[in-house]
Length: 196
Image (cartoon, rainbow, N blue to C red):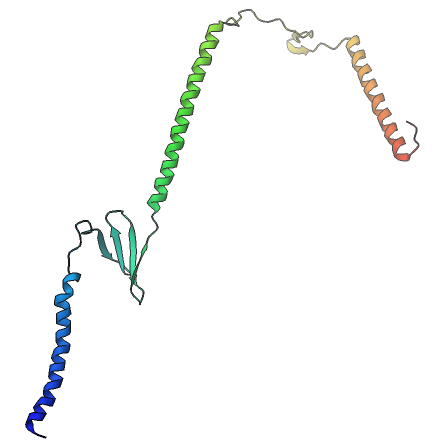
C-alpha cells in the first residue's frame, strides 16, 4: 500500500465525520428559524409559569385558569385545577336571583297590605274605643266576704243551694246508671248470652 492510498482511506472517515457534524448545524440554520419564530402578539405572555413541588404551575392570563404541569416520563402533561371560584360565582348568582325574587314578593305584599289597610280605613270604626263602664258579672255566685269576729279575720264561702246540690246529684246518678248498663251489655256480649 502506498502512502497516497493510506491518505485517501483516512480522509474518507474525516469527511464523513464532517458531514455528520454539519448536519445539525444545517438543520439549526434552516429549520431552526421556523422554531425560533416569535409567537403572534395574541399569544405573547399568555401563560406564566411558577415552580412547584410537583413540577410547574401554569397560569393562563386570559382565562385565569391554573394548571399543574409535571413530567410523567413520556412527556409533560398539564391538568387544570378545579376552579372553586366558578362554583362560588354560580352560587352567588343563584342567591342574587332568589334575593331579587324575594324583594319583588315583599314589594307585592307591601302593596297588598297597604290596599287592605285603605279598605279597612274606608269601612269606618266598627268598635268604638274603650268602654268606661265595667261589664256586669254573669255568674250568680256571691263573692266571699271577709268577716271579722273578735279581731280575727274569717273567710265565709257561700255554699250551693239545695236545688244546685239536687241537680248535681241527679246528673251523677244518671251517669252511674249508664255506666252500669254499658258494663252489663259488654259482659253479656262476651259471655254469649245473646240477650241485648
